Image (cartoon, rainbow, N blue to C red; front, top):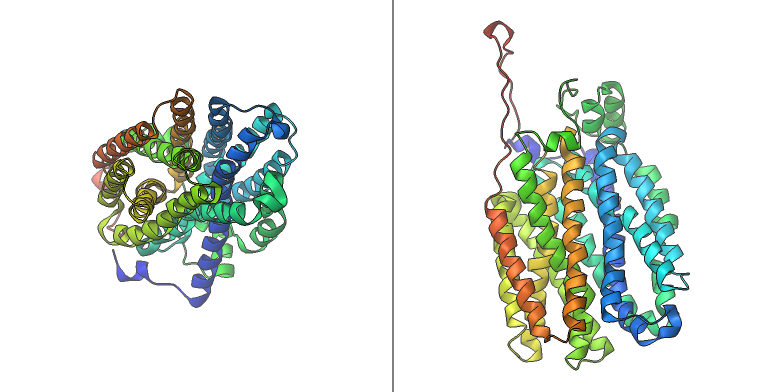
Length: 447
């Protein structure tokens, strides 16, 4: 990697990228808020049938999964259209979609209505998750991509921390409906900023043959001119590119990695407060475990991303998956509270923090014509794991199994995720035969 790829083209370039990363991070914070706020209100909804109706443990797990089904749909839709319509437009659409869904869920009067609006909200969340990685990968200097991706996707655990804190401080005062209304704030806070400060990706414009627009964006925001050439008419774009020899095997394994990471993320965030409440901790005490889980993910994920920028993300992700497995087993051994909290923090690094690293790995695995589709595939297929996680917890708890069984199953999934990560190949290079008379002069390529 050349030195130039690790520096800023100008102070304006740096300011513009900071704004873009900040906007993407705020969007993902509300993804994390949506993920965790349901877990914080689930005990209340199950204990008080006057809110939405009688909710069993199995129904609680199913309601947690409806949003994740929506996320999968939203991510796959974004993958189908994102590489064709652009990063900016997809971000704006999904900010509005998500906010409207959260606000509507707050006014639900039945389990069916609540589940429908959770699904609707999930579509917007999936679009945001799939688009944010593509945005950061195309704006951040190569030497900082893992760090900036980690900052953005650390918005997931940061949103979890926000939801946990607000639930502890405000749940009794504003109720679960008030907590959901807070999730609608991006419509009035984030959307106006995004309209002003979020440009279209010059690399995407260039790849679509819109070189003049790309130059205008670069001039306005201080970006260096992208080197990407327009996509050839024969080159596959979006999901079609993922099935080519260059990406097919890696795409399959990356999807399995994301499946494992999101199963752990959603399974623990949904059921950890309930498991700890059943273990004898009071309401605020059980929420504190959720706070530690997500706090550990933020700190650990950012530290691990710095290592990933130097050594590459693959080996780091293998290590964090292994740490998750060890920490989850420790939670079954009856250690004193300080040790348990430490284990929960390490579990946060190895589960939620690992998923943060996976998004960075995936975002930079693909070239511009396939990037949104690649991130969307991993976010979408991975959400199948997110759907399974809460359901597994609900089924085991509803069947009367000991809490330790949940932790052992999650630990085994973490080990499997690490094994899959180990075998992800570098993207295959497809070489077309070129006659010597047509061969271009050598060029310098940043890697």
